[in-house]
Length: 181
Image 1 (spheres, helix red, strand yellow):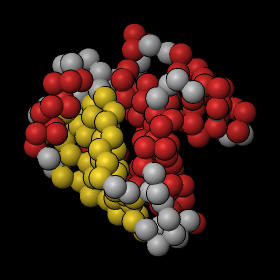
Image 2: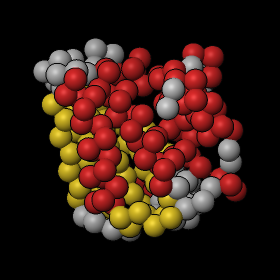
Image 3: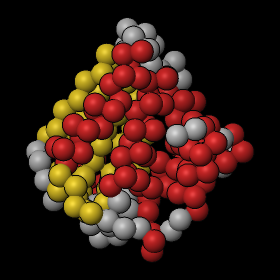
Image 4: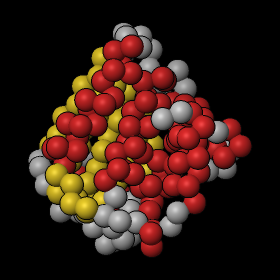
């Protein structure tokens, strides 16, 4: 797909609300395997080690293609932010409270590289900035939330999604999953 087509798709996704979302049952382990396979080439090209793990298996009701694209956009941003020789880790966990993806790595300024997750300047900036804002919107449409934790140059970006869209408030899922971490 060309860059212009991709940006048009991103804008359409950005404008959709949860009432238009069509969900399917995704097996977490299969979703993660496909995501890791799709992301690995961009890490290899940048000389970055990419590791992934799945803690527990289960299923989640989600708009599969949208969630996959959102998670892949986040991983591509992590690949771009990583230094050659660095490591980025993707971890997934499926718990009774929800499904969580955690992307961990390091960057010179983690807040700067993830700033585009906020919608404010993303529409004007376009490109990867728009991709990250769309990723946040996709997670929110599922009733989930995105949270960034940093310590110096180290960061962990959490994408937290209820097992069924709009099942529980995102703050409840976030508090439960972060308490377990």
